[in-house]
Length: 124
Image (cartoon, rainbow, N blue to C red):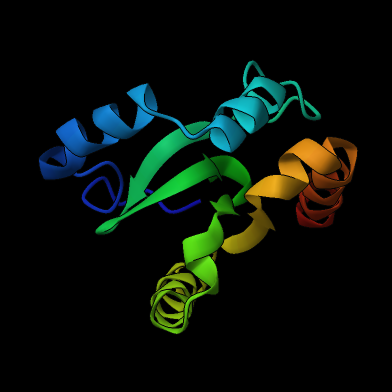
């Protein structure tokens, strides 16, 4: 696990992280209910966690796993490029990034959880 305290939860992003936590999308709130309190194989997740200048939806720092939920905007060309740059930055730090469409959280939450569990089991 990376321990650079200047990389995680930068002070200048604190208010923005708080705002995001208070205004979760319905998909984020639904997934958070499945991730919080170590419900997935005992792993601790954080929501709206900042790494560098990016705020990720969910992060399991110990296992270096990031989960991102994508709405419609993530299908637009410009956003796809931004997501690729962001994902590459996070991967260069050693993180694995899982992306799921918002609708999948509602349509097949079991699939989402199983994919997260598979990823976590590979990292142990």
